[in-house]
Length: 219
Length: 240
Image 1 (spheres, each protein chain N blue to C red):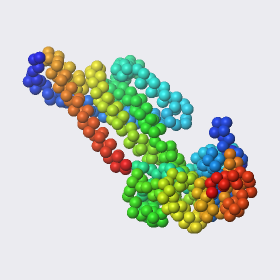
Image 2 (tube, chains in turn cyan, purple):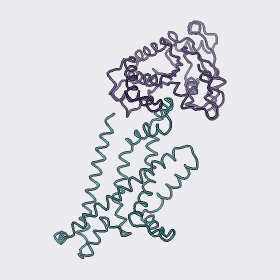
Image 3 (cartoon, rainbow over the protein chains, first blue to last red):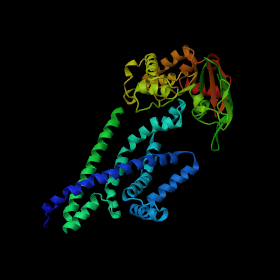
Image 4 (cartoon, each protein chain N blue to C red):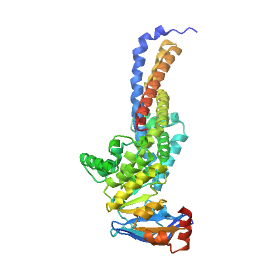
């Protein structure tokens, strides 16, 4: 093994910039995925049949096909079909947001259904309307139960974000490849960004534990 | 006043309520008793439409809850309910449990809701627990909070679904005492219970259900001393 990290030094600022590019679209994707996922989960447990069918079909499509394929289709087909020149960032956010919303909706649905049915009855008996009941009574309790699963999904999303390198988005992974081909040395930049990915996931893990501890206050 | 007329409830092919009619007058305390599976709880849950009757009507002050397009949320605000398993909101403090619905549903100011809630907590003897979370309370304390939470909406009528059945024996009394005080204060109450002592002492009227039918009703004195029907007699022999 003749690893030589010293050659990497001039490229470090370039690669570090990838942290922000990656974080940027991961955060937006998580927000899109969470909002959409919550809506889909409410569709799934609701009583309006067409909405239930829609949510189920949606989940089955986005969970049933590879993420990289969804990304390609969005990035390459949108300009061809609509003439709109979609950029890499928007494609990435769309693909990841739509995809993770399918998973998140399943997590939230399970979380809502795991909340004691009596909670809903108590809220109904007090005359609390459905919206307020969901927002203030049921979802906060569901969230507490599903937090580990949700964090897991966010961690997966952070790591899988490396896929966007395939459409030329200059995220961490792509930058490692660029540096690798510039240096004719691939291991060092890959190991370097590998370490950064690990650090990012550790930060997420710690944040997750902190939130969990906060939510446990009422136990 | 709440009036149930010809209530039927089917779960699948199972007839749980079979043509039940009853009227509960303002200020009256009615105990609903009967063997398990007799439909007592279902009957109670039909009164605020937690269970939708298969047919029949429920009227509260002449408003038909079972009518199409009835504002069920509005009507439920007039009907408080206390559950066997309390169903306090675990992520809210005791005080928040009491104030959430008045603020959210009735539009009370927070300060006003807090003041009212504190009065109610004092009434059920739990003033010191305002900031506690439900998980730190005993069963009896939880049920007293649940009663206070129902009262916070200032309902005209309170429904109790076996309020002491999930409690340790030594905690039954503290809950029954609160209920007795309520009854004395003129609250209209419908109480599904296995506490024959409570039914006998506090209730103005006893309704006896068996197999989904209203078998017998009358004053507790008459019912417990000399039940008119064979089925009620058999039941009383087993429980007393």
